[in-house]
Length: 106
Image 1 (tube, helix red, strand yellow):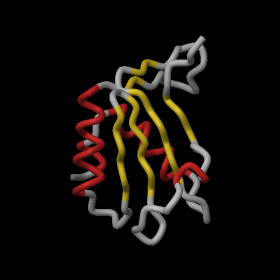
Image 2: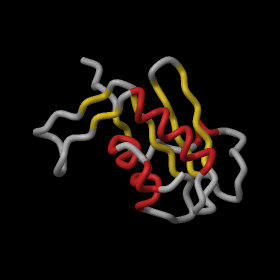
Image 3: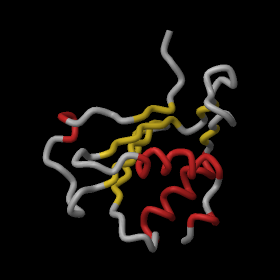
Image 4: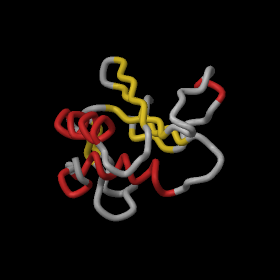
C-alpha cells in the first residue's frame, strides 16, 4: 500500500510518527470517531473514522517504506507505535505518548 492510497485521517496520524525521528519510540494514540475542533486545529481539522483505522491497519502491515509499526486497539482507542529495531519494547507505559487525537474528558 502506498502513501497516496491512505485516507486523510490515516495520513494525519502517520505524519505524527514520521515527523520527529530520533532515539525515542514514537507513540500516537487516537480515538476512532475523533473529530478535531476547527478552532484548535493547525490548518485542516483532523477526523479519524473507522475507514481511517482500516486504512492505517492495511498500511502498517503492507507498507513499502521499511518502517515497522505496531497497532493496538482497545474499543475505540488505538495506539500506533513506530518501532525501533522492529521490536516492541518490554514496557510501553514507560514511553510518553507523542501525540493524541482524543476527545477531552470533562
